[in-house]
Length: 253
Length: 303
Ligand SMILES: Nc1ncnc2c1ncn2[C@@H]1O[C@H](COP(=O)(O)OP(=O)(O)OP(=O)(O)O)[C@@H](O)[C@H]1O
Ligand SMILES: [Mg+2]
Image 1 (tube, protein in one colour):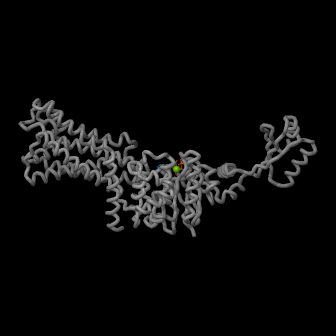
Image 2 (image 1 turned 90 degrees about the horizontal axis):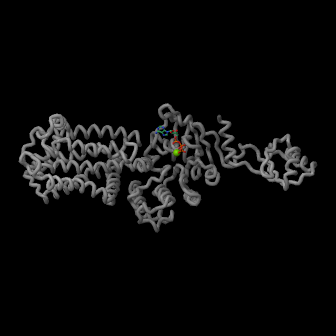
Image 3 (image 1 turned 30 degrees about the vertical axis):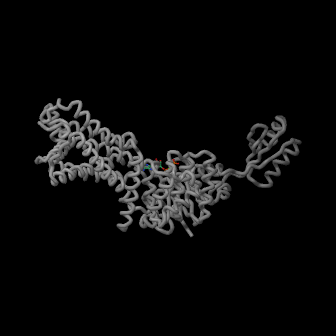
């Protein structure tokens, strides 16, 4: 079928989902407010109490805060997809001459764009409260790449759970479990100051290299091994959940 | 012209065989009702015809296109209104319609949306969020969305389930207006009354196949013949009559006896004569068979 329709259908679908975001204030508040509140608490309440290896609290934690923001954002992606399935909107679209790729495509694009915007907002707020990045252009680009791949990977995870879960209440639960994974990583505390068992776990799960690479890149330091490992995790998770989503979509639709 | 033609559709889900060879034909411009109880396979049939599901075997054509091989052509000529109103609650009524218009690649989605809003009596509520809509209004919007871009065949899966009697009548009226434009309506329902008053032709889906098919009048002929209802002024007369008509197995009610007949003049005359000879005062009425009786008879025979 022709590309023109695929593009215009995707644009219509994306516009629809974008409207859903802008019209539900709670989405915007939860996605931005929670991570920012957490950043402020960490900075002003626990501020000097933590040993972050000589790095300032905001400088250290911003990467983890960005990741939290993305996860609370994709929880809503899963929720919106689930509601579309439940309401029969997907079926309505399937019975129309609509480019099939546009149906999930609209959700995926919206998720990526809206999360990217949230991340920019978090970085701007971070700058206001003392974030001092020292990355050059390449550092910023590399950090942006990791973040976009992370957003894309988490988006596909959310698509899968949005399609696979049986109820609205459980559709977004995965995101909160993954936020737990962020806490059990080097995002907020260096692995060196963790109990050995936790440190061992933290070193082998995806959130640690992702947080480390983004932090090091933004602070203008060499990311070392964390960068390729982070990229591999993002691409691997994204590809696996993309495949699972396509399968789940076939079953549900 | 045939709008929908299905031959020998079969469909199983895991161990359960839902459709065991469904064949039906719907003419252009008809209102066709597929009648069946809960779980009979109505939605499954509609989904196959609307290209959402693939049949395990059998063939179906809609608007002359094969649903399995020419899905896109079929989708261009149909619309589907599912069992539950599929509308986007965050958008307004107008935005929902415009979205569908754009997805159908219409030249003027806004103009067409305006036209449908007027047609379905939603102009006043057009720019309000759907959270302010009543159940009936949501259903009307759902139907309006299905009419965007003038599809030739409209599938309505249980369009009145969950509506109050007033809302149901409003949907019936809407469906009748829809066919004035020449569109074919294929609807499913569990309500005999709905099929009776709305449909040109009815097919009864039972145990995975079409158990009977025809106009409401034709189906009613399959029901047991009309019954004679005798009404009495007092209990004594009724008891006497029950005795006189014992051979016919009269069923007593409140000062009434209902007698099953074979519908013939001879038999009816014989019953009247017996009452007359016994000097019993009574009035009578003949109750025509209902579609419900026809439905039950057909289903019993199928077992
Ligand atoms: N995707 C599916 N997977 C497994 N079983 C299914 C699926 N869809 C339908 N069924 C089963 O097939 C049978 C027929 O379902 P269908 O929805 O077609 O019935 P229906 O006539 O529309 O019923 P209702 O009046 O309740 O809407 C039911 O027993 C249902 O449980
Ligand atoms: Mg059904």
